Length: 341
Length: 106
Image 1 (cartoon, each protein chain N blue to C red):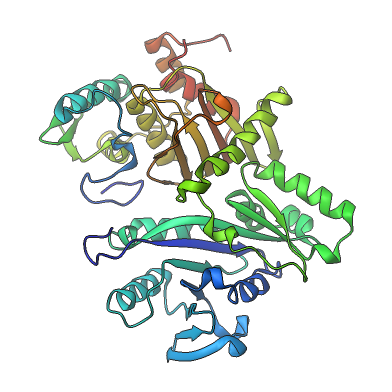
Image 2: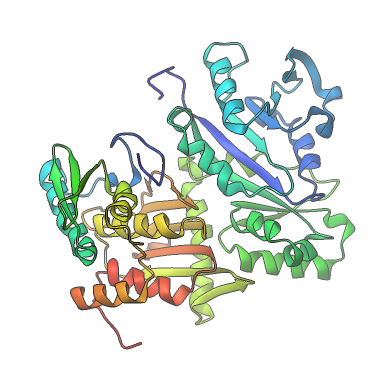
């Protein structure tokens, strides 16, 4: 609980996707879902979403209340200012209480700096916590966007959930090729198809690592990437331009201080290149597995799992990085942290 | 201020710990952690010491800085030395392999 307001922190979901990918269309459909009735949505323009038929009440110029109970707000000025303003209104009871904030980015946005904004502010970081990053990739133009625009690759690489939109407009071969490519670019993310008929699932946002009932399943998905790595006897999970996904492993329990020292040193120098990091750690003096995850410079506060997935004990960390040589990172990890030798 | 997460003060940084056994004596644990850090910091002529629930980081010239937790060490280390502290620098990796005896033929 937050000592200042006694309100629990709001989970922030970033909804991103390249220009024309269909993220606004996804958002429109999500706004009607009862499961998101306690959510607020922060968008750039009301006009883009077309909320008129959902509208119940205009709270003021930049905040409206929707039929589902969801609050919809436009970003006024900078993101930090808008978040602080929304937090103050929530604390003062000037907007209905909400427990989740869905933040829709522009099509060219890199989610990394948005995450940094949330955690760099001494007030915001206690009021908000990061939830799933959902990235929409268009099944028709997605592959071309990944080829041509680094922003599109970065958006896909940082995602917790990848939504393939417009699957009703693409043939099966194209969809499968894109799925394969996305799985290589971001092996730890769940990939979900979406067409005009399917109702999007609120679990896209709601089911995450903060949810104790979903935590084990979430980590199992990350580690499936590591199993794939063993099956293919390759150090590189995938290479996509200069973005690579790879795995760091250690059989012996790690010293937490050594690990923290190494990772903070790595992120201090290469934080903008480490797009995502997700893993399970075996730590000396800790009986249960420790879950760690981060986006660029940010590392979330570690959480514990009750048991080792599949009974396999050991450290496995999936890293998605831009421009870093996996062999060098692996060798550095071994030299600084690994206790195996 | 922590360069990683922007926290002021030492509260609830991810590097603080994950409930490891034997960490119920914070000052002793901080001294142990300082020893671990000094294996690396020594490469840059720096020394970390436990000090009043925090750490001090001192260079060869005696210039020093107070750091609240592990996450804040590297930004201060680079300021104090004017050098880049890069764990992916092959020379740094080789030095760590030599110190810890973990080197493997490359």
